[in-house]
Length: 383
Ligand SMILES: C[S@@+](CC[C@H](N)C(=O)[O-])C[C@H]1O[C@@H](n2cnc3c(N)ncnc32)[C@H](O)[C@@H]1O
Image 1 (tube, rainbow, N blue to C red):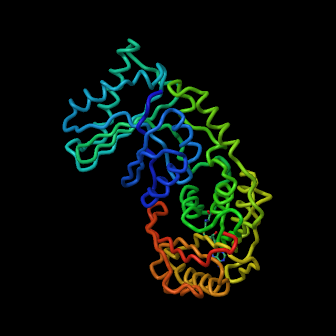
Image 2: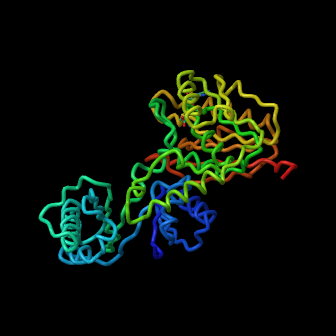
Image 3: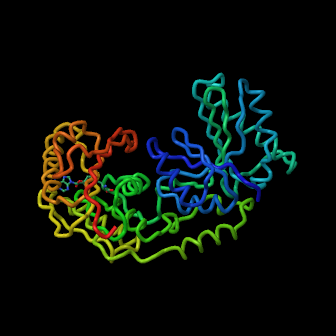
């Protein structure tokens, strides 16, 4: 297959992380913009990106980009795209439109015209009045921003944060894609101790373990484009085989989860078991204030409560004070905390021996604007 233009979509703030992940996969031509990283690759790249990207939301095939100012133009440009090369005769092809600051402002109309244009194009290949849409799914997205349209096909389906292990609901888990980014933005690497003292259902630890094992996060799930004849099945088989072959044993070093809530810990234990990590991650019920660890050069990566709701602020602040005390006690450790609480740094204080060495990164936890506070400690002597 010829080179395709592909787009990895991301949450705001994670573009650089996803771009680095694509670099590591060997895709060197990349363009980064708000919420997306564009890259080029063949059919195998679609499979590999879906299987391996840890912090991206989904992988799209970009079919066209053009300027558009009226519906006639939109209809013509969409009709001339090679839809029959991508879709099957029984394809299900829902269309979603987004219009921002453009002459074409009505999303329902943009959606309807695009759908009509795709049908028109398919009729040229399969002359029939009606397409049943009972087969594989090919979600089409048309996004028009300042009169520039981009037409894409979604190869992923359910967002990439769905790794396939979380079959239990409950708690307020962090998105897996964000958890993977927090780990990748930290100095943690396999072989160092990692602790999350507000671990909830264990998302950060699970992502870290998979990074340490070089395990492709998508191995335990399927993707829409696996059912597309346009991307041959052997491409997916090869990519899955490559992912299985790449997996390594995690070097000996504890991954420690603790939380004061026994119910979320129970969910965490089940998640860890389903993720095949029961031997690797251990949980303990305890409050942040009771956290201790005799290992040196560990990393503490955590997503504590933000105290946004009425009556919860003081409790969150008390917890941050507790985290600060830990940071002054464990002077070889590195500390990483994601929170939306603007007073975090003042309340946390300074970890010992690291005056002024804080890094701050704006990230979004869903709609909540947060800061990721990073206090890197000394490098371990073995690195
Ligand atoms: C935002 S949630 C973390 C979610 C977690 N990252 C996940 O993916 O499931 C915050 C967690 O902190 C825990 N927590 C709140 N106060 C605590 C305290 N004083 N000590 C330990 N854990 C606490 C809560 O029980 C909750 O599970």
